[in-house]
Image (tube, rainbow, N blue to C red):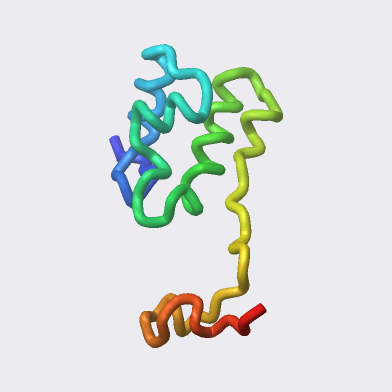
Length: 96
C-alpha cells in the first residue's frame, strides 16, 4: 500500500491524519498539534488546505473547516533581495 503524504515538510501521511481523527482530534488546530502538519519549512502553505478538506469530508462536509485560515501579507513590502540576504532587512524602506 502506497503512503499518501499530506505534509512533505514534516512527513505527515493521510494515515496519520486518520489516526489523529480517531484519537478525538476533530478540529484543524488540534489535529495540527497531534500530527505536526503545517509546522515545517512552508508553514502550511502546501498542506493546510489538503488537511482541511480531509477533515471536512470526515466531519460531513463542514464548509468552515474546508476553508482554512489564510496567511496575512507582510506589513511593509519587502524586496526579494532582502529574503536572499543581499541587503539588510528594513534598509530598502524609505524613512517615514
